[in-house]
Structures are given as C-alpha cells and as structure tokens.
Amino acid sequence: MKNIQIITTISLLFIATCISAQSISKNALGLRIGDNDGFGGEISYQRHIGNNNRLEFDLGFRDSNNVEAFKLVGLHQWVYKLDNNFNWFVGVGAGVGAYETPNNDGAFALAAADLGIEYNFNIPLLLSLDIRPEIGFNDNYSDDLDLDIALGIRYQF
Image (cartoon, helix red, strand yellow):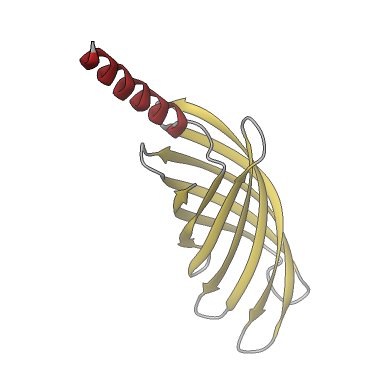
C-alpha cells in the first residue's frame, strides 16, 4: 500500500511539472542576442497577462560600423501552442532609443512587430528565435525598415 502511495505521488508531481512547463510562465528574464545592422544584445523581461497573452520589454544596445545605439522596446504578444513544448508567437509594440554616429547623435522612436518560435523546456528555461521588423522615426537616422533577428534565452519564474 505504501508503494502505491509513493508511486502515485511521484506520478502526480511529474504530471504537474509537465503541465506547468507547457503554459506561459508568469515571468521570464534573460537575454535576446541578434543582428540588426550590427551585433546587439538586450536584457529581456516577459510578463504573463492572460491566457495566451504576455508583455515583453527589451532594453539593449546595437553596434555597427557607423552607428551605436541603445533602445527600449515594449511588445504585446499572443502565444499559441504548436506541439508538445513548442509555441509560436506574434506581437506588436513600440520603442524609443538614442544613437550616435560619426556625424551626429540624437533620439528616435520606432514601431515594431514580432514573429517567432520558442521551446519551453521541462526545467525553467525558454529558448526562442524571432524576427522583429522595426520602422524607425527620426529626421537624421533610422527612417527605414530594419529586420532584427535574435535568439533569446530566458529563465522562467
């Protein structure tokens, strides 16, 4: 009888772990590293706000041959289950930043979209790959479309 209770308890804990690993975590914090006209890195925070909704905030820098910039981007994302621990997501958002070139420096605003895929491990780790088209608004810099492709790694809590 005691063996059945132990096996049942272990089984329930295993099932609960698998189920919770397949949902959107309440919080996730990590790095988003990619390329947008040069190497860049961002500190990334995600916050669950609904059944399949979350907010993502990224604070990072970009470094290319002609421009150094930092930016803060906020996105609203919708997350959809693909298979097992795989999800895909789509989102929209905006951001602000500052840049420095050899000729001038200043600030800019941007509008962004987001499309990606993520893998939710059975441990509190989330890996993602996404593309973020960004349209910048400024008189001297960033009045174009940039495709920010990045790999994300986040700790979920």
